[in-house]
Length: 309
Ligand SMILES: NC(=O)c1ccc[n+]([C@@H]2O[C@H](COP(=O)([O-])OP(=O)(O)OC[C@H]3O[C@@H](n4cnc5c(N)ncnc54)[C@H](OP(=O)(O)O)[C@@H]3O)[C@@H](O)[C@H]2O)c1
Image 1 (tube, rainbow, N blue to C red):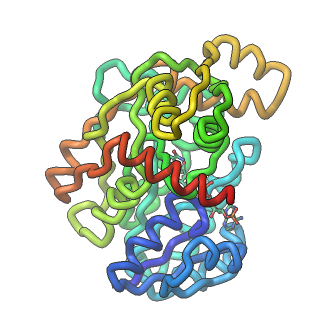
Image 2 (image 1 turned 180 degrees about the horizontal axis):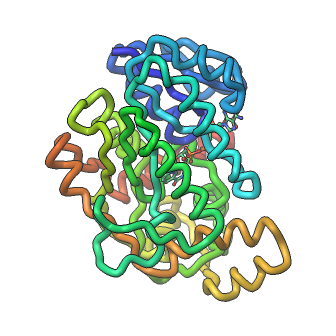
């Protein structure tokens, strides 16, 4: 089986490449920056296609004659409409060959669910412009007539997860500085180690029984941001205070800045419980997360420590 990864220098994309290549699978990666790709993944046997996920010609080259495409491209929140554009480019590029498209969904799209835990049957209720965009991309792919599987993942952390939420948590703890998290910090939340997140996507890849299906990933013990951050301090051997921010204040700040507005559009997932159930995914693929938070945090700290030196 041949695999293509769009967005292969990103957190989830690079981890999928690493895992597939380690299994000796044939992997092609669409990347904008080949140097970054080989720096992130030295000693990895994978074909790199240099190009842009918004350029139809580049994407066609990246997905030609593959069996599975992992669509892992991501854009800054202030340019999030590009996720829809990139999804349209992908659909056009794969229409003739129809490989299995695997898409990492998230929890934003469910809004405040009437019942917990969230399952694949939970209706969407995106409460913000950014969450509505993510839902639109998801539904557009699912209704494209292609064999698509969406796997809704909790927020991930781990090596190369350097987004503006995760990076400061680890860097501040390593430096013994206080953590200011731009969302509530006392609500239980699921964080999944990046290797487990990638394994969840790989578990459905090429499985005909998973075509046209949506899965939620469970089996991750919810932990408050405060406790998660305290565990990072403990593992780093440092100390600091953890402070959060209520959702209403974030929304208020959003009135004054496009960046804050975009950020506030996804922070609802920290304001209430969005725990997911992974029974269907486990039943159909056997997938269960393997890395607990203590182990995952230690591995992540080691990566940030090494990246800083
Ligand atoms: N982060 C989470 O906790 C989380 C949780 C659940 C689901 N997800 C979903 O997982 C997906 C990937 O997220 P991520 O956090 O792995 O993203 P990420 O780390 O921000 O990586 C984004 C990737 O997209 C690439 N990219 C951006 N614009 C591009 C373009 N025009 N052409 C080609 N490549 C481009 C980036 O390349 P460069 O390296 O060149 O910038 C990078 O490889 C998203 O759909 C996200 O919603 C994320």
